[in-house]
Each structure stands twice: as structure tokens, then as C-alpha cells.
Length: 114
Image (cartoon, rainbow, N blue to C red; front, side):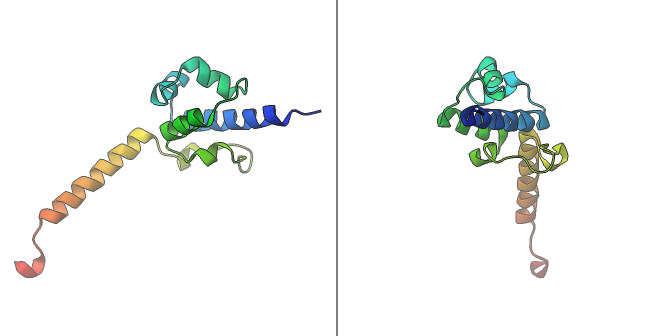
């Protein structure tokens, strides 16, 4: 008889692993960002341990996803395309660029005032 608890742990672990790899993070990098250990992240990814909600929340934040995204079964063949995801560092860079552009536009005088 299949173990539904183990199946859920494996689903969550695989989702974490897919998202981690799509962002180019090692287990250690994710662990550092989630205030955990690399061994613990590995055990979660393999479905060997039951991660608590606090830990899953920190992992989701480190991966820049909603915690519910860790529970949803993957679509299609079970793979998340890396092209559809953006690494946190790249997102931070984009936010900085947008803020700079907004600041430059704010300093400009309106054409009607010229």
C-alpha cells in the first residue's frame, strides 16, 4: 500500500529541487538563504524528513515563490522550464534598474514647462 505521507514529502522535495536547480543554487546556497543546513535541504529534497511549515516558508522565500507552489503537482512532464523562472539576483538587478529609470524620469521637467 502506498504511503501518502511519503508521496507528499517526495512531491515537495522534488519541487524544491527543481526550483533550486532552475535558479542555479546549490543545496548549500539554498540552505544559507533559508537559514538551514545543506544536509537538511538534501533530506527534504529526497523526501526523507518531514519539514515543518516554518522551514518550508523560509525555503519558499529563499526561492522567491509562494509556499503553496511547493505543494502543487508539476504540470506536463513534471519539469519547470528554467526560461520561465528568474533568479533572485537577476530580479534584484531588474528592480534596481527600474528604480533608476524612475528616478531619472522624476528629475526630468515636463515638456510643457520648457
